[in-house]
Image 1: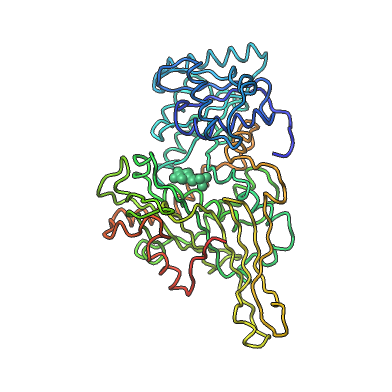
Image 2: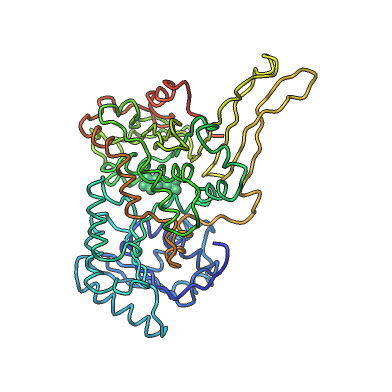
Length: 499
Ligand code: BG6
């Protein structure tokens, strides 16, 4: 997002235009793009959903969403007044061919008025079961026919497992080109996730040490304080492994582990990430418990406030076996990473909201200072904070001031906020603008999604064959089940607390 390059006329059509994602994320993001003058002059947003309402009511509903969820806070009358006329609402049934005829007419009218061939972005913010249905209807209405100007955006979850993701890929690529499909993983739109690539590939200092010789292990933590909120129905069919590890955490792992791309061309970057996923050592079905831990929160307290157990959340069965926590140990079997463990963990109702990567370097091979100098010694470690307060910290040793020789770890710190002093765009702003511009670098290619499912599939298989007997096994507000600590303790390690 570094220059206001020319953006061509565009219509964004959101299926699920009345839904939560549209309200909380998509429209606030589009509105910020509008305020920052990233959207083209000729821009329209069409929300499609079942609810019967007129344009004015719909616009008001969206404005409330922007007021509550935009990083900029409340809308101003004059600015919203310029944005709102671009928005229309179509009350319609996604399964009815008539909906697509109306849509087609509407799109045709825009083209006529603007005297151009606008880009059409079809954004599926719907239940996963509707993806194929809507895509097929769009195809039948010939709305994908112009390959250069039409794109389909698909939210996660992309499939429910390896088989269903393959089926969905086959179905969609039977209706359009792979290049027209933008599979979202919103973590890839986060500034700091992109910054991992800048850190690694725009600096020469790290590359010589970024390998098994110098790096002892890597930890990736994505901790959430929230529970499942109002999404119990969806979440109970997903669980932490599908909801977070299969996509967000594995993508962060790919950014840490990928080989330098030859260029930042979309397929080149995605191929390098896919190589990492394909190199992940398959977890043998009969050894899943040695590599993976699952957990579910029971009642507890978050910041002093009582928090209910997962099984008491709305739309969650009282005997649910769904995991709200997962920790996984993975190896990337290639020249660079052979035998370096990558520990991944994520969970809901943990004590803090923090996403962080720790790259633990090897200890020095020989201690040349006197033994008592090492009392507070700790090996080098890089912490890459994805959120909140995006930052990178490098821990190294310094001599403590004084007449005796004592070493103490100190931190070298880069903070996004302090260094750049400009507001950071939300992930969805970056991703929506990329779709509008037709840049797929930060989106998942079909084979990439399947490779990620292949990593977690043995775990899914084992878990469905062996329902958990100890759920709930961690209290809301704690750092997860004890077994997750044991997973690292077996290797003589522990999870690092957020920096
Ligand atoms: C979503 C998951 O993909 O990511 C949610 O479905 C999760 O369960 C969310 O809460 C976390 O995203 P973020 O940006 O808040 O870290």
